Image (tube, rainbow, N blue to C red; front, side, top):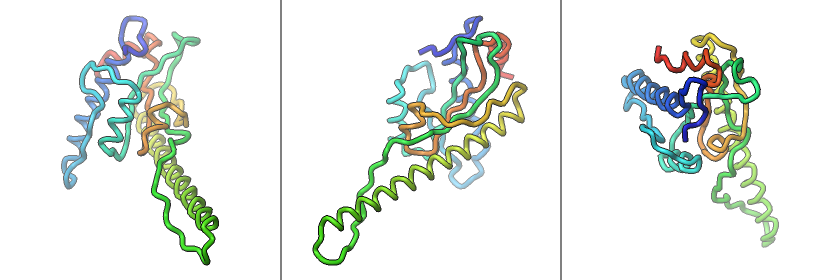
Length: 194
């Protein structure tokens, strides 16, 4: 899937892959001094098509701590003037299933015990989802702050969204839009590795 395409033919898929490969190299080199370093796994390292569901499945299978998605933005309405970068975090997460804790109840009232179990189960689900979303928001704001120090274009902020890969990955997740490939000036910048 080529994704968005610039006016002079630059493809989003090529920009995204180049940035992701550079990030992998940077992160593994930068943090190799840590005990065990960090492990960076890619959903793709070449021009391979993966559905959004396959990307989510890969992250789940790897039991990743963080899912970081790189994208290049585009706009139909404001094609030549669209500008800026933004980072998204999940608005909500898919319900994660846990084994309900066993709650002791007085007497033999199975309905009361079942209601207690369901209430605790719901609280655990909500706390887990909130924690992951909050940690995702914090990471999105940190990414946005670091990009703002390096990019000379409008800071469009960290925002919540229900993009598929954000909603259905159970771990901390962010999606960064590095620039508008539809803007010829930004396309030229995205074409240049420097």
